[in-house]
Image (cartoon, rainbow, N blue to C red; front, top):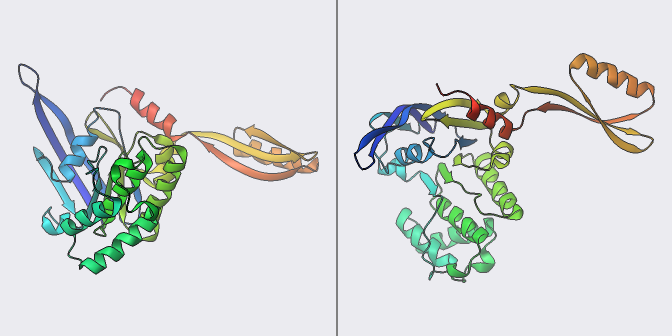
Length: 293
């Protein structure tokens, strides 16, 4: 079952003093699975924002098909199953964290007031903001605002969560904490998470699947590991020589076995053998440098 299936999505805009048609999406195809984190990557101007707007019903595609939750069209019922955190969310700064969630909870759920308060308390605890529930949002840090925005995206318990640059502007602690929350939502609660990001190390660490677009077309869709394993950089052996840890790189499996036998014959202790693949950043740059099709 797919949570989202996008087929041959096309979108053009007219731009310039003398309006000319600019084709932004040139036939986008991809799907999103439940219980997994899917990264949406692409350079500025690749078409990510336009794609997300079409998915959310914020703009009308020229052609193509978008289906939700196993072949449903976007209607009020489907929208109620989608949570969204935009890149630049707007916050009513005079509201407290709790008031902010009450406002969105009343808009997007049918929960009784008492049940909504329980839901909000659970979310504030999850995002580590229970201590700041009575503090006005104007006094929240960037990281705290990202957390309260994430809680807002989850207030109605959606099955599909869309996050646009959720790590932007966060310090390492904030990025780690929000990453753990995103993993919990996908892996423990079984929700589909689809997020756009320019922070490739975060995407590599979090995402099981990737959708990479370039010039309005999908240039890669699939498992993150399959992309990274396309270029194998050999193996690294971590071993102890006279109680000092050392590292040794080898090119292939035959050389690896010979080095292991040699190190053991010299009474060295082997602690770890790593398969070295390209990083997501390297893979992304390789894709970006390919000639335009």
